[in-house]
Length: 188
Image (cartoon, rainbow, N blue to C red; front, side):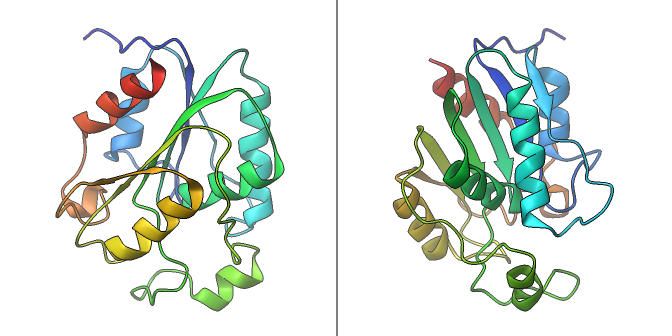
């Protein structure tokens, strides 16, 4: 299978569950010609500052423009990173950001835990690069209204994907062809 060619290097920023074998980001990484991925953290997995440092480390290793591709908490990591750092970012695909003000199901960190680890308050100012926020009408971690508020604050284009849950394997998503289309658009 031919690799998807891009001018920019794509940096995959996974969420808190990091690299899941059948996740669209993991499958996408294998299809791209110019790609890097933020590696899993060995310790302090909920430490937002450590996640931001990991993004900065990967961005600093890339020569030329970058397209960020983040999912779930990875989107929040990108917002925190962009508030502190600058780099030649060509664009960002920000998929299924969770709402820090929502009550999440059991098995997810509590708002108090996230606040204690630096996730809240979430930066809400305009991102210094073009971005597309992809949201769902039935995501258990964020309402489409909450996703739309985040997108407005970041100056991002909002795309309603419909009923795609959290856009992860548990919601029936492995390969997501839409991600490739968004990346190609951002790479133009």
